[in-house]
Length: 112
Length: 224
Image 1: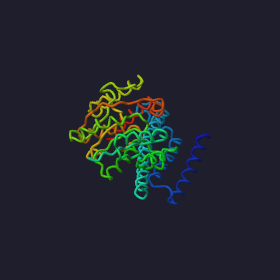
Image 2: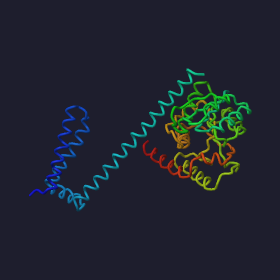
Image 3: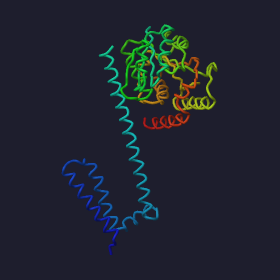
Image 4: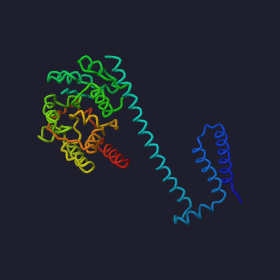
């Protein structure tokens, strides 16, 4: 009934989940992140053990193959994450410039 | 009216000193050079030539350097602030024509244009890209300019106080245009001469940078 790959993925996901829970207990993982990754690992377990769930979803959205649905979703998620990163980096650049500017102006007040 | 010249300088050793002396010869004594994290002797050369030098500990980009210089000039009581290139592309004699409309209170900002009197030795590709840039300015911000990326500008105190550059790099030129439009500042273009030498051409942006700037402008517009 269950094949080798399924066992492997479920085992790994359970392992990852356990590590996640430990780190959550330590409070070294923020809540948002914890929920995000829990969903991923639980999702992996569910989808691997009940692949029909994915096929049903794929049929509902009219996509056809389940794996296509996964890939499309992943691509959208990646675009979104990259956009968030970009915004963060831009903000950091501006923050750095503000710091450098402050140093430059302070240096002037003390010096000449 | 106190006129202050602000220059951003990044590795302009050998050029910045001459530019400062030339400005002084034209009776501009308030010169601020922002050393944008240069790795050469730019700072020493500028200080030695008699300019007030501010130093960025790391390189942030021309936009950031100019804004730092503008902040200092405002704090120092400037009435008119002129942005000027440190690489010798600009001419001190163009400044008078540049600041007169601002001194007379007719406009808040004057922008140099190398295309108004056709006094340019620009290579063809660069001219083409700049023309496209000017067209983009019109489309995005509604400003009709002949030269959108000329570093020679004069800002009234009021204009300098209203404009806050958030972009660090070369796209600051577009951001200035955008803020002129946003704050409804009165502006005018005056002709100036840009001298291209092999030195300054090497330092200038390569033409592909224009595409990157366009992309940033679009993204910026979407963010608002």
